Image (cartoon, rainbow, N blue to C red; front, side, top):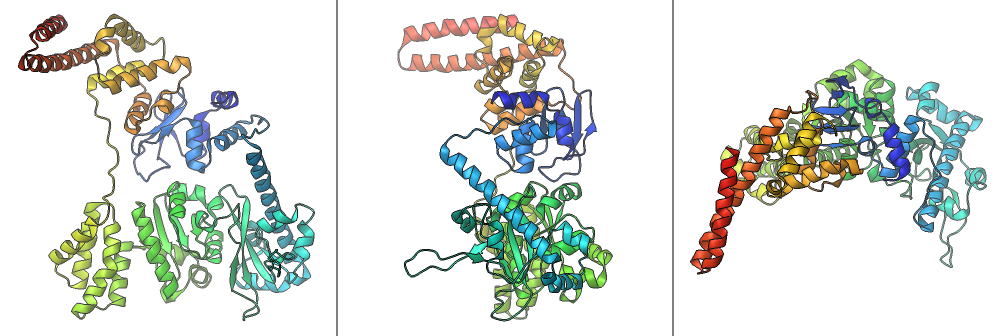
Amino acid sequence: MSDFAQNVKQQADIVRIIGEYVRLKKAGAQNFSGLCPFHSEKTPSFSVHAGRQFFHCFGCGQSGDVFTFVQKIENVSFPEAVRTVAQKCGIALPKREFHSPEEAAEHRQRAKLIDLHEAAAQWFEEQLRSGEGAAARAYLAQRGLDEKGIARFRIGYAPDSFHALRERLQGMADLDTLRQSGLFSWKEQEDGQPGPIYSRFRKRITFPIANEGGRIIAFTARALESGEKAGPKYMNSPETPLYSKGHVLFNLDKARQAIREADFAVLVEGQMDCISAYLAGITNVLATSGTAFTEMQARLLARYSKRVIVNFDPDTAGANAAEKSIGLLTEEGFEVKIVTLDGGLDPDRFIRENGVRAYMDALRTARRYQEYLIERARVQFPPRSPEAKVKALNFLLPHIRRVPNAIARNEFATDAAQSLGIDSSLMREELKQAVAKRRDFVASAQAYPLTRAEQILLMAFAAAPGSEARHTAEAALARHSEDFARIREDVQQMVHLLRAREAGIDPLAAMQEPQQKQMLASLFVSVHDAEPASAEVEAAMLTVRRLALEQQQRELRGSILEAERTGRMEDALQLTRHAQEITRRLRELD
């Protein structure tokens, strides 16, 4: 860790920083607890220790310091987390250093591209307010958007000009950077070289797409006219160094805190659906921007909540997109519900025609995705013949086998069999074969298997230097170092790392084994904020020493028998003397 990062960590108040994301309540002298932001829970298992300046969740095992938390919650690198915490603490940032000229050049290029998108957004906003933007303003008003809503989402207008945007931006960057921005198009010339650039978006309403930090990285543009000359109804920025459509969710920058607080997200297809719901007060809404939902988007959403209500358009394309999204979300462990609005309306139109209360009622009565899929199978393949039942079964089986939990998977299969009129034993057999073809979901890591004595031993070494518990443990270790050299190797390693804290080593960062790391974190974070008493430590030390000696005794007995079997009588005699010494030391412990 750099000197600057260490300085930031020492000055940062982890309770205040995490409190910006999680509602914390005092749960001890220096402990605070709340609902974990990294997994869904109803009972708080997320704990923050003010004195030791780290967090731990007893439910999912996530733990670390203030930088670890910001990295996970904001999905940023370690250097970015350090900068974020420094800014929150009002600490001046040092001049950024790069590991290579290439890294420095890439950073400058990304900064230029972000500046270009910000300048383009401002220009589009200006054009919407101009005379030429009148038709666009009328269209937006017709869709129920007022000036505040337009300004909130920075909606703009790209005029019917090939060169106006280029003239606005050309003083900001060179031609190669303008090409990389995705704001311009060009035609390849006869010699294979790219021709002059011209505006990609023309005579279109523009919707900026932002990253999680709120920086504009791309645009979606809707045509005001229809027909072949107008091109596609919606046109998106191409893939650029800033923008990969499968890695971005529209409105996440505005919705992420609301998603955390509500512990669920509403997922819609288009920007207007998202904007209408958000401006109506449903602020935990996101959009896929009309693209297929991806694994990266699911993982992005999972950092804020593992519960989602999917409300895609009811047409064929929307239903197919919903099916794919359900499958992906299910595999990622989400709790998924589905909304199908009355009249086959999309969210935008439904809210405008029926009001936000009716839409909220629809969200509250959202169906479990299993019910939605079973109903969809029945509609597509009415189960009136054996052939139709086979088709319905083949439609549902891929979705059933994606369910990671065996009990939920069996319940889904039973409901499907009953609804389709299929023998449940046949359904289970088909499911068994289907599940056999996929790797079973890895169960969540369980608590590390330590005895109570070993836990107390580690708790004593986890206590603050100078405390009574720590003093008792250190004294016992000094008196009986030979015995403790025989204790479990993993426990020895944890003791070593805990003692190394005074040398500036972070035991949580140094520990490689996830289960051991979780065990160490749980030792640090005590809900009762209590250290073991000296008598407990002494008793635990005695027990751990006895276990170590008994294990050594068992190993010696095996070695003695092996030496006698192979005729190595001198070795057997020496091993017997050693075993007798172990027996004597065990008697002293009684």
